[in-house]
Amino acid sequence: MEGIPAFDRLSHLVLNKNLRKDLAKANPRGGTSICESKNALDRLYCRKEIFYPLFTYKLYTMLSTMHFNTLRLGERRVQRVIDVQRKYFRRTTRMVFKTPVEHLWRDHQGMIDAEAAFEEAEPENVFEDTDSDDEEYEEEL
Image (tube, rainbow, N blue to C red; front, side, top):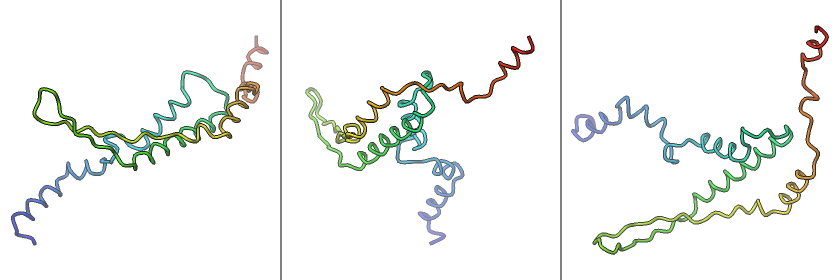
């Protein structure tokens, strides 16, 4: 195969240093890594500006994971393609619609019970278990 102009040209393209570096970063999510997408959902469910009790962080992580898994399953579904004829143009426009994803886990009775239990629970005293130098500081004064 070597010596054929088409093969030489292809090898020149594929063995390009910049292309190999970009291929390592390429992914099917359009420039957003899976980790970045998951972190965005984590931030959606557990905002940094609001201080939640410590025992709820595992719950929020599980919720964002279930949401992320539902979205990933939804991406595997068939997409609807519609060709639309515009009023004043000759060409048609192709519109692609994703099938909507139902988050069935949100309506599950266990989730409803967990939300009710969370709202009825007493807030946790975070400062109870932490070591503080405040007592030593007060003794020195």
